[in-house]
Length: 253
Ligand code: PGA
Image (cartoon, rainbow, N blue to C red):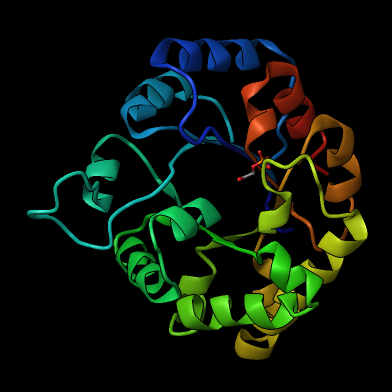
């Protein structure tokens, strides 16, 4: 069975103290992650050791970075490498979030390099893709997402691809309160899986978790996650609210 994942993306929010309190409060609420379910917290870089310590020993709960460098090490002021992340106990990293693509000019090619350095070093990427509003309005989202997949992923081996989690996040639904309908999410998730199947075969494509992101909240998580090709969510705003995120974890099938 594919992994079902509720991933929190704190983005550039909360102080260290607020973040620690949020994790404390979430841990106090009842949630029961089964063997095929995971909760993941993508927190700002300085909070990674706090989150690793706080969540140590919790089954199926992981901490992720929100980005990493495409370079191994060296004179890259302000950058954080895979090795640095691993030295503080991190196994997952979010790559290619639309905010990184839009505000920090991350291209499909750069993301291919970041994926390479992660996969060469056993760091598991959560690779984000998804189209802006104009593309959705022109009804060319499939072509747009297919190009993102092709240019960033298709040089990878099947074994490498299986280390990746994909997050489909339509940019028009991120932080806007506007969610893709569960039918829209299912349609493009099935398209992504079919593209992966065409390239890598159905068995590999079936094993990849594809998360939906874009205004996921407690009130829509069950419906979204019940779609056959939606394997959980990457959650921004609602991951900062204890009851919301706990309900989203509990909505995992
Ligand atoms: P949102 O953000 O849930 O606030 O829309 C999702 C994301 O950007 O990962």
